[in-house]
Structures are given as structure tokens and as C-alpha cells.
Length: 273
Length: 273
Image 1 (spheres, chains in turn purple, yellow):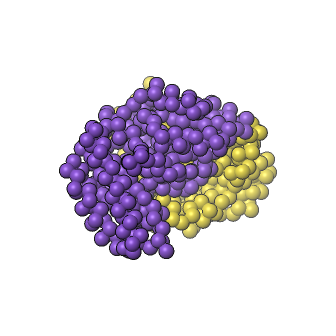
Image 2 (spheres, rainbow over the protein chains, first blue to last red; image 1 turned 180 degrees about the vertical axis):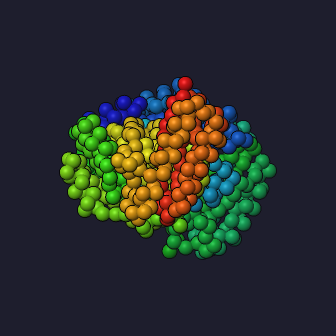
Image 3 (cartoon, rainbow over the protein chains, first blue to last red; image 1 turned 90 degrees about the horizontal axis):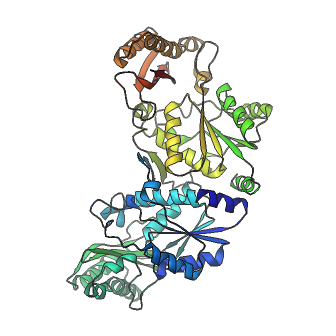
């Protein structure tokens, strides 16, 4: 892969990169399509990164089907799929980690300690291997997107980081590889994340400015679903990720909810004048 | 700098890189000369990196003279000097750090907490900016060299890391920018570091295999100098940096000693059959 990306550099080809953990869906494909439009070459990585999973998390259960992924990518014309093994990516003894301070403590960082260190480390590695001009990420993982943007900038990685909008199912559920783990019943419950965000949007639209009040209503709506357990609901400054008490200017409403054993996340950006 | 290094890539020029903190001496120049021999272009950075100094360390006192450095580099034919400011390298709020676990806890890491995090972070940044094929470091900073090699490998930086031998003054003192801070009296005391290493070498040559016994004799010799204070003397495995009790195979003898206010380091690699 490194030889290939070096060759693309000397050939002066622009390279777009979409790092994924596979089991692709329309969300990933929207990133790949954008990259195909904007670059000479598009490289997609499929790597289920062990260092971003906690010891009690769903690494073993994470869905995988490389053949299916390759078929989907070929169909839309992606040039290259890079699928290293965990042994190749983390030869023992592995010792080096990239940390983005502050931005990774709140939200998902609180319930998934070490998660973002794993994410920023593997993305740093992949960017060093693929050497793209632009890398594409989805807004669904809002905190990840912010941490990666900050890392690329702080470490002078000389790569554009583009964050594209969440792609949703017709009933509003944010697309996620993890949705495949939901039973049919859980799948119908799962729409509550998006419904809750729409409720928040409506409240703010009607003039509510208290984060606490909005969050309380969101909590109440989710609690109506027996099979759900709230991990967090937060309203934060979309740059610093610090909680805001009064909603004004830009705000990010983010939540994580367990539907059965499956942890789902979603978010919405608001602009209030 | 990034535009220039990108252009060198598209021109398929090989780039050698020598990162320094300036106030150059023959040790640095030996790295630059080697790079000039081995690459189409040689880039030298001069940057006194604030993040590798502790709050009570000698950042303010660290010697600097960019004009002199430029003169010396021009004389031996170095192509490019890169001298960013601290503001450019660490725009606020700066949040991203590269850590190499384990290798940075022992030796200098113990007495200079946070030092190696600063070193690996700035070297990662500089390598991302300069994008060299090979980067050159001196063996004098043995632990730094090992940490950087590990980082470059772990993070797939696709750069060769070459470690060149310590360059010494005629009386054995390892060359260091910090030597300029020594008073004439301290300068004469400072030879004790190298003398101590030679004593250790002699003992091992005569069959001594106990690290404790070697270290004790080294301590005794240094304590004869009133103006000196030992920070550490260690005999370690040169790859893991873990202390070894019995000397066999490869061993790194490393020490740090304060001569007056100035902290000096030196080391020696031994091979015992």
C-alpha cells in the first residue's frame, strides 16, 4: 500500500481516502462517491480496529463481510480497497499512541475510555500509509470527526478532512453497521434516537433555550421504550464539546442509547440566532 | 515548508532531514554531512521545542544563535534551514500528543516527566512537514533515538531513522549545545561523564558482569567531583531500556549528571559474548 501511495505522489495524482470498519452502508458509500468526484484516485480501507474497542465491547460481534464490501465498492467504481490485518497494523510490541486531549474526554469518551485514543492512533497510521490529499468521515461520529480534524491540524498532517452529513434510513434511523445487530423489534425501537433529536429541534425552534429542559424531555421520550437504556444525552459547543447551559449560536445535540445490547449514537447540529 | 517538501516529492527527489534545536556543533554537522552524502536534498530544522522542557528546566537559558547556525550550514553546503516559531508549531489551543509507552518511562523519562512526549510529538510534526526519506539523529540522545525509531515504525511513517555515533571533544566530552553553558572550571569537571563510561568499559572488559558493581564504581568516581550531582546511572537492554542485572549480550550504559546547573548526558553501548 505504501509503495502504491508513494507512486501516486510521484505521478502527482490526487488521492481521496475513506477509512471504514467495513460492513458498508449508504453512509460510507456517500463518502466514497464524493471522493470519486473530487479526486483522481479513491482508496477505501476496511479495518476493524481492535484498539478502539474496550474489553467489554462488541469487537467480536462487529459485523464483517469483506466480499460484500468489495462488491459494493466495485459497483460504484472505487479504485482500491486496503484491508490490513490487526497483526500487520499492530506488530508486537506495539507502543505508540496519538492522543487528542480535552476533546476526547466528554460524550462517548466518558463511557468508552481509550476509544478515541484507538481511533486517532489508527487514523494517524492509515493517513501515513495512504497519504491522501483528502480524507472523508461521516458526521454521525461527530466527536470522532472533531478529534480527527484537530489531530490532523495539530500534527501538520497536510491532509484535508471533510465531514459529510449523516445518511438516514427512510424512518430516520442513522445508518450504521451496528444496525445489522438489531432484532426486528429493536430495529423499530431504534428510531427513537432520531425522534428525540427532532423533538429537541422542535423545542428549540419554539424558543426553548435551556439545555436541561430540552434534555429532560428527550430523556422522557426515550424512557418510553422498554428496551432502551440511555448512555448519555448532551448539548455541547460543537468545537470545544463543552456542555452549554443556554442554547445560543451553534450547538451540537448528541446522544448514545443502548437498544438491547447494541449501542447506537446520533446527533444534530443547531444554529440559533 | 510543506509546499516545498510536496514539490520535492513530485520531483522524485530524495530528502534527508536533520532536526536540531540549533546552536550547532560537530555532532549536528556530522549528521548533516552524512545526509548531504546520501540524499538529493538536505533539510535542517532549528527549533527549540518548548514542549520537551519541564517548567523548571533550562528553556530560557538554552543557547541560541540562528545566524551562526546558518553560517555553519551554508559552509558545508546544506540546502535548506527550516526554523518555525513556537507559535506556528503550537497554535492555541494545542491538544495533540504522540506517546511512546514504556520506552519513555525509564532513564531520562524518570527525571524529566513529559520530556519524551514533547520530543516524539515535535518530531512527528516535523516529519509530517518535511516528509523526508531519511531522518538523522545522534546516539548521544540514546533514549530519544530509540523512542523515535519506535514511533516512526509504529505509526507507519515510512521514513528511515538513522542513528549516528556520538562526536566527542578531544578530551572525550560528548558534544552538546549545553556545553556552552559550562564555566571553564565546570568544563574541566564535565569530562567525568566520559571517564566514568571508560571505567565501566574497562571493568566489563576485565570480566565484571554485575551491573550493580559497575554502577557503584562509576558513582564513586563521579562523587570525587564536588561540583557534580548524579541524576542517574543505568545499565539497560538497548532495545527495551529495561535495567539488566547481569551484563551479557548488548548493554547500554547511560548516565545523566548535573555539572553545576547544567545537566549533561552520555552513554556507551557494549557487546559482551
